[in-house]
Length: 340
Image 1 (tube, rainbow, N blue to C red):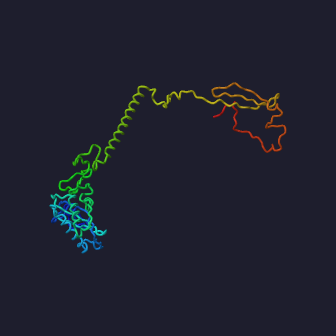
Image 2 (cartoon, one colour):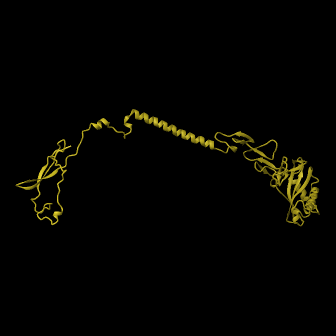
Image 3 (cartoon, rainbow, N blue to C red):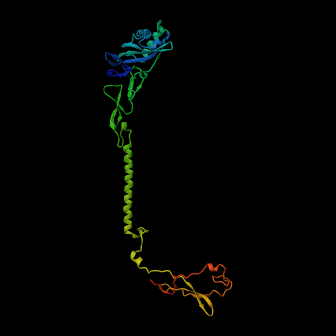
């Protein structure tokens, strides 16, 4: 940073205020001027001290170059001076600026021709030299604000600075521009409000528009859903057949009025004994509490077939004494009433 604020058309570089390219220091301010930059290659031997602008070698060679250029431009009105900015190796290559008054008729073509004539007629430092025109926009510090402006070449020694998209010019300087406030954009070098749904720098933010679109879509879907529900309830109210088919059509009273049902009794088999037929098994179907029966009855002789294997055989096993039958005291025949 510089110890004091730098004046207009200047910038702080390495703690020193330097005028922008295309301006010169006049008193304590930088003023506009016509500047024609270029590189001049002279037939001298380069030494490392020439890199230092404060060295004797630098001052010696630069003084010779400035004097030769002053002589070359003596016939052009408005010439102020020439400045050697840098010396680099390659024999000796000098970066020079030739400055003229703002109202001078000097052009790039005029100054280039003057230098060429001086080189051709010189027997001093310009003898055998070569001159190359360079761009004023490429110098440091640049003549235009690099953040807000674009620099273009011109033939009159003045930079052509134009505002970038989204920026507008300001009244007190033509070397910088300003941005439009948020929510505005640049149109014909004026700040105008953004279209609906856009905001931010130069109206590049469309988030508001996207939000409005999404809200409209969701609102439309909600409206369609409400209308569909209204139509559905209106139809089901007028036509009960469209009601929910899963609802029960049987009332509780109808359910309780159905007759009680019961399972039929399982037929039971009993053994009877008489003198004529011996042991006989009889099966009868006892009715239910409502005397329901299929009317089937029958008796079977379990001893009439010799080959039938029964629990009571003619040849009892030797281990029959181990398995003795027992009477079930809780057995109740089906033909006897149960006690409650």
